[in-house]
Length: 227
Image (tube, rainbow, N blue to C red):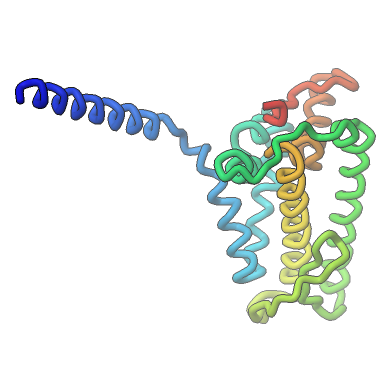
């Protein structure tokens, strides 16, 4: 009986220790490690009401401001909610093959070529917004991969100016398309393979390169694709 009591005491002590350790690990998590929730909320809110798409401008401008004034790609490595979401899906839920991305994805010509293509699509969206501002009818549609219209009955947006709503439709199309591309490369390759050719990452890398006058260098590229 005495030995049994001692074993039970050790067992209880062990469980208290492991619980305490796990609590400490939870406390060690920083606020910026939960930014994937904001990314998920943005996608859900955009499907609920397209006007929420304007919130995506935060994800668009903050990395540029950090690169311009901070001279680093800290946003990519610490504050990118999309990267965290892809990492969560790929590692924790094991949805990724965890294979190295092909070389062409990492090549300069592909990364900057995709950036140019992305910017062309972005300015086409701006032009469509300007057309609606000038009197053209509002196009209530989300376009995936710049080709396929999403079959969705969008809520009434009559409370907003037509050009304001048009920009939301166009911007959410870009955000949703890039998310799908990120998920596709997450499944096929490593979880954060999207970071290799992300237009925003390429743009901020170019800003950091110009800022420090290191032409052609990869200064400031802090993505986690190698892990």
